[in-house]
Length: 247
Ligand code: NAP
Image (cartoon, rainbow, N blue to C red; front, side, top):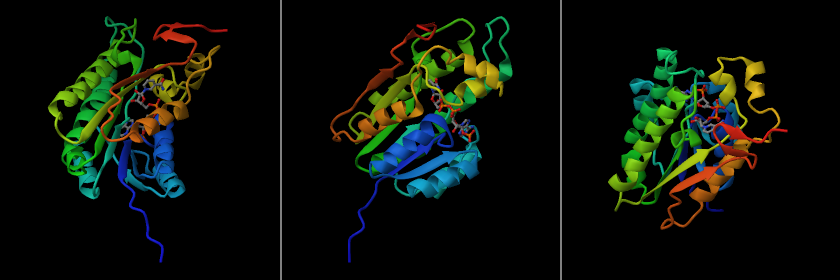
């Protein structure tokens, strides 16, 4: 009889598309049992079947959904806080309060709810890791972007606070700050306007979701005493949120 190797569990939020979906694939290839979580269960189920993982419905903006999600989980070694995104591009003078609420609920309070629920299990694993996907919007501001940059700054502050609060516990803390990545991000930001979303990536080779996922995989495969604290990655042709070289 051959022994079945134990696979530590990694939870990836927002795994139904983009960076989260690619991260689930990379972590599964790296030997993790990956729990893929988001609201679109059909997409998660297809992914879980492909990577021999587990699909669980999760709305990070709902206390009840996060509680039910946490109750359905067993041991957890890795948490990737990836669920999030942007809505709209508006000046402060014309800010849409509903878009702001969506961004804060998803990126900030969503990360808080899930992290808070899973910290005890990450500590109990004896070798935990929390990766939070923030953005270069967590360290920059840009015109018309205040709802997203403010939310990403807050999500980053929450995440970085854990570095001190969990000091002495067996949990590593990594923040990943991507620049431009071609995913459904801009489609969501522009409320489904595909033509407008496509203009964001015109004349530039953006990062792919897999480019970011491979960095998460590298982080998760370091020895447990090595904490990759903060990682910024951008396309070669992007200098800052508002400055890119387009051809
Ligand atoms: P994406 O393809 O739109 O993926 C966003 C994911 O978040 C989806 O799986 C979505 O799943 C999930 N999500 C949204 N609201 C949720 C909720 N209430 N509960 C649970 N899951 C929710 O975009 P992406 O680019 O991969 O974004 C992933 C992360 O990277 C986000 O935090 C984003 O801010 C960050 N980021 C993106 C870029 C970029 O240029 N693309 C750059 C820097 C940082 P459901 O809709 O199925 O729930």
